[in-house]
Amino acid sequence: MINNESIVEEVVGQFGQKVFGFEEPFGLLTLTTNASDLTEVVDFLKNHPEFKFNFLTDIAGIHFPDNAGGELCSMCMIHSWENNIRVRIKVFVPIADPKVPTLSTLFASANWMERETFDFYGIEYTGHPNLKRILNMEDMDYFPMRKEFPLEDATREDKIDALFGR
Image 1 (cartoon, rainbow, N blue to C red):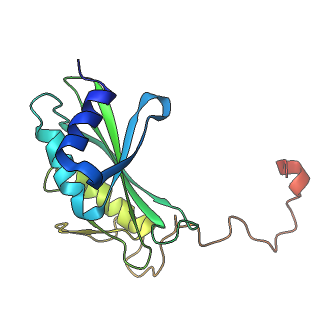
Image 2 (image 1 turned 30 degrees about the vertical axis):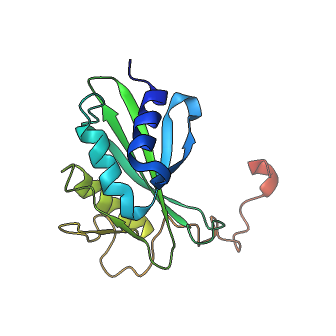
């Protein structure tokens, strides 16, 4: 029977220390790898004769400003329809050089997901066939989902913190 333990055993057997940070929040197997190993790890899981992770559910970005050297995270979630199991894979990259290899060579659906993540977080997916902004204006010189901007305008006087539970 395929379960999180059997997947971890196979992945560690294949990649050793290239995969790490195993967690199971709410039963969802989550692992971390380096950007240089991402494509190989995802390809292994996709083409594994038993696992068959044949569907890319999502790619998203996350900004961790306090995680020096790995401020940006590109997270992908893959799903095996046949086995009804999911795996989340994280890659942390420095904000100064946010490069992650594209998964569009493995999953065509990665194309738009990577463009959206680039547009909002600035993660550059190397090898992507058309990496450009998808929702924001081309001439924007910032990435709006990064935690670099205050959430609210501090000069506003119409909001009282007590009304918002602060």
